[in-house]
Length: 140
Image (cartoon, rainbow, N blue to C red):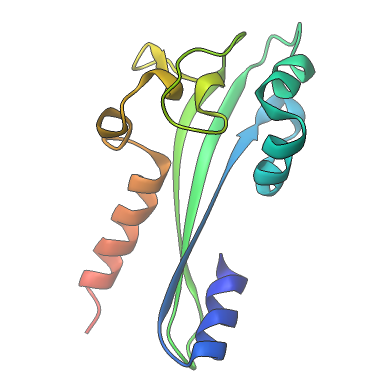
């Protein structure tokens, strides 16, 4: 997000905001991470579940990073995350991508079982956006 914001701001000569998000699984050394989109397209949810077959540590995070940059300035980044676990099977048909396998213990559901409104109450994107808004509002 940092590189993308700086590059786009330089090319467009105006302030820009970019966002990137991914799934980070501790037992897989934080894979797929920045490769989440590619992994979703190639391995999919079943491939992730297969990689974690018989793996007891299922801790995972969804992370979102917002990058902001104005022309001739250094970029600022804002990290938001949601902690959870990779479920043992897909549950729910709401959301997209890894949502049906990302289980949030505090909710007792996967992201795939939560409505957009429910998920947006605490999502990684909400968290990064909140940090950005607080910072931006404090600027002159």
